[in-house]
Length: 540
Image (cartoon, rainbow, N blue to C red):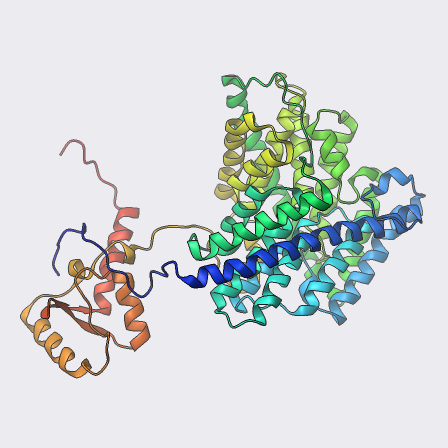
């Protein structure tokens, strides 16, 4: 093989997926998806409020309220989650099993295995089941269900259009991100969540439509729900010292440890439910019993808990509430989620992480009220979701304390690092793996894209003779010819498209080499050596 330099001008070719007018078409549809996603988020929040009011207050209102504020009798606190679990089990068995779980793994599975096709009934059943689960006291968030619901809206629209599977994926993710942005008024975090969790790529063809959908959803959200931060924190006097940044590492590591424990509990619970000798339809009711018992111990652990998160982030939570949330919320969320009920993970993670940070803030130096709770929130999000940047941006957009960016980044990354070191997979990818799917969340440059055909081709006489023969035999098949400045990625796509194992390399009408499937391993071997081969180069 030759070893020519790699600083050549690359040709536009198959496999680059360059920006085309199709991106503009998909972006136009994404604008509609964004508006519909925002309306779906608004509808879900109102539906959760309606169920909560009906169950705990016996009134017909849609305002989001805390179940604990009703001071309901003990039997209602105990039995309401059980009844909700029974209804969800029936909906899952006789409606669609896709409503089980917290939404994000289901959206990922749809993207990976079903060409981003979501059944229309999921768009109706998922928010209904989530509203019942949360409204009857379930300690879950609305974001997972709205991701699935918004994604279903985008997918259903895409199914009615003549689109590729990748374009359907883009509209599915556009709907999911739009719903997330509208729920938390967090456009940047929604886009990051889409990139870190759902798109599995970083390309203009998908990024631009997703941003368009999120932008529209945020504007619509402002018109119907307001434009202010969900949990505003007074940042007056914020002065992040070197000591505070150093202690952010401690918050991050403890947050990562809590994330590991919570994730472990979720899947131990799932394993335990799987061993029960009766149908999974009944599992959510058992999870409801766990919720009810927890509610008797700490009533404020019930429901979506936005009021508790606000108290934690503004420094108003009492020690009893902090400890109660840290222990009870973690336990009932982890154990009941393992039952396969319907509900999201972000709001509970916000609350658990905020409680941890608030507890540590009692011994750490004062910065501003709620500062350490913010760091705990970011750390646990980074550890549970394995999305450290999303954890940082979420916290900033929820509170508007923009000056806390560095300590949040430190805490979130430390939590993420500890989680990666201890657990093989996250709370999201473990569920995917248990369904027999392989999923990587690591992004890297394709080594085939960093080498040219001229660097990997065979140039010996025998290969040149073979190349000449191939050129004559393949002449009727336009395009089965490689050029020296074609990347190996292009060559791989060319081989796949034409079902050939080798092709001549031609430069200005002259054969200069032969490229084969074996040549593609040249780039893979180089990538492997860079990852594993250790050497000292300074003293050479």
